[in-house]
Image (cartoon, rainbow, N blue to C red):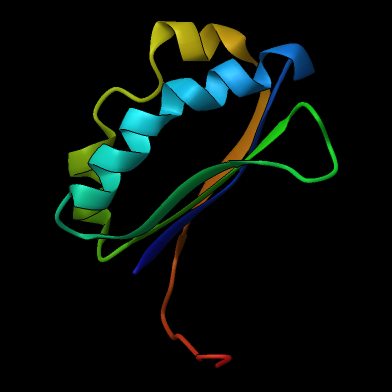
Amino acid sequence: MVIVAGHIVVDPEQRDSYLAGCVSVVELARRTSGCIDFAITADLVDAGRINVFERWESQAAVEAFRGEGASDEQGAAMLAAAVAEYDVVEVRSLT
């Protein structure tokens, strides 16, 4: 399993429009083979922060979906980003 997690920073006044532009990406990802979970969400504390969380069955699934990454418009709106991929060896359920 691969987890992609982190956050991006946008102008707080642009966050809602940025997230609205991500709806189709989230919908597409969740329909994609190998996607376990996919979320791009507003941070509850920081008005300019957007949290990213993805779970994929494999690195191949991530790469098949990722394509060329963020659109030019989304890339231009990002002031900063800290997102990384993690290879998961073991999973322990907390429920």
